[in-house]
Image 1: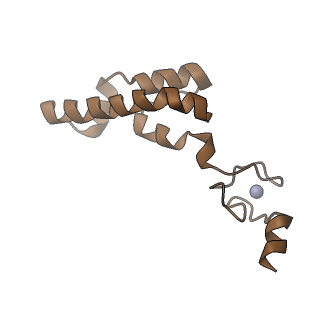
Image 2: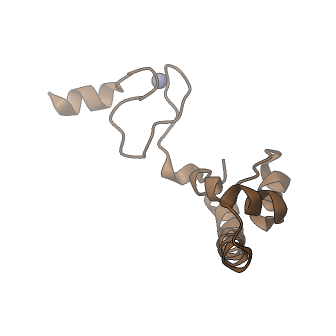
Length: 103
Ligand SMILES: [Zn+2]
């Protein structure tokens, strides 16, 4: 997962990578998988430098931004799906603040 500062650095690389993939596919007529395998992706390389996590598909990186998720569930440790989530989608836990506001 990337902080907002890390995301600011990665997003321009990601947009450039996506444009390169589109241009390469238009130019050569190859499929997406082949283009992903052939091309070098600056966003994936920078993400690896920051997190140590290897990602081969730059498009997946859109979901690696921490601020699009909510806080960590106090019961199971998973992140809530959004900052506005009223329950944990992983274990079903509803924080007591949410239960009180629903009554
Ligand atoms: Zn949970």
